[in-house]
Image (cartoon, rainbow, N blue to C red):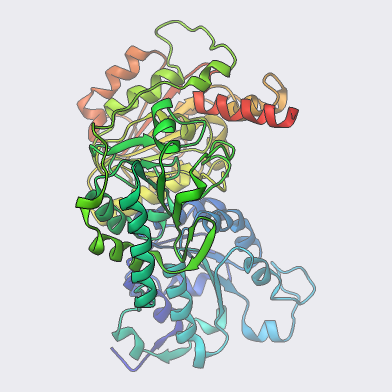
Length: 573
């Protein structure tokens, strides 16, 4: 490698070294020159329909590969992506957002250029992004640019949150030292103070040893922080009852004999809630106690003997200790004496019953052939295969899948905390692209509501352009079902235009028929969807399989009904 490279080449080579192969985004005049440097650095340009979709797609890509990248132009482009980056920040997803900005000369002279607010302030949008990114770099100086790039990218990985890099148009081709590229970025987690780590680990283990009914609770922040392998090793060694939260589904193998199910407070199955809440020692990993994840904060964990391991600290009986989870998890696994643990006398089993259901409005009566939520999500357990990648839109699909038991090694994404409708369609695009690059086995499967799809439908065109293999189940239940249950069951503001959804793929460039890259189907009965699920051609998933699933307008999964019923109760009180 020569002694110097262009600044753009340095940046893009660093992205490639982190495992990124494709960059999402939309071209604009302030980033066009930089786009020419992607291919020489070994990167592919995706080219999305709009910046919001690009941000969502980069998020899904990052969840599959560990990190993703997004490129937009200054002002109009970066603000269009702001919602997506905010979601990545809330959900702990590392996305590198590179913003092509006007030249350093134009900024210094405060020129009134397009895509600005007309006040000569070129820092206003970067300042906005400080609220939703964990690190920022403005590449205005060749002497510091490479170290700034390395600092920000390392922070993105270690903190598992998005970062912001401003690349002025006249800096793209500036020469910078290339020497650092000979060494990969140091993305190893920081070491804990060994004496403190040992003391904390022994404290936790003593609590586990003395407990008569200890359980483990694993949440989604474990996988978001690249700690699935360490958590799995610990879980397997303990053989203690293990439960996941809704956000944590897919983090732990649900086929393990010690897997007990999904815990969501009052939204749990009865036996799950009893096992967790009667425990005298709950060790939780990466817990996010958001309203949806906890069924409106209805957790009832033993405060007197609970240990919560977060990424950079832990809490024992309400007392915080700053310590990194990576080293502590490995220490716990190494020090664990399994002979001192009290294990359950019998194997855990699913018990699909909720006492809380008795407090819900009476279930509507539908013909036995109707595809209802009560039917769909239970049946999905039988159709899913090991290694599948399941993407569910926040709302009825996400809450419905609480009742689905996953086979081994299923990867699952949604947006539990940020909950931006329309997110999952383009996010699934990113997942499918990343899975292809990784050569990962399994099918990419998306469940998307009709209302959500209308926000980001252009992603279908991008999927087709990329020739991605994906199954899309479009749930057509005539409007915003979640909002109907929250408020306004029959109000017009929860209605949406009646699109002809099965025509969308062809409208956006699909080649239908033999030798094409897409198939479209409609299913209205249980027999039709079950027949589809057993079709060999459908399950091979070559290209796009677009299935419009018709469901009753006012039907909803039980967890959604419970969530909304508890909301009404809280409002009344």
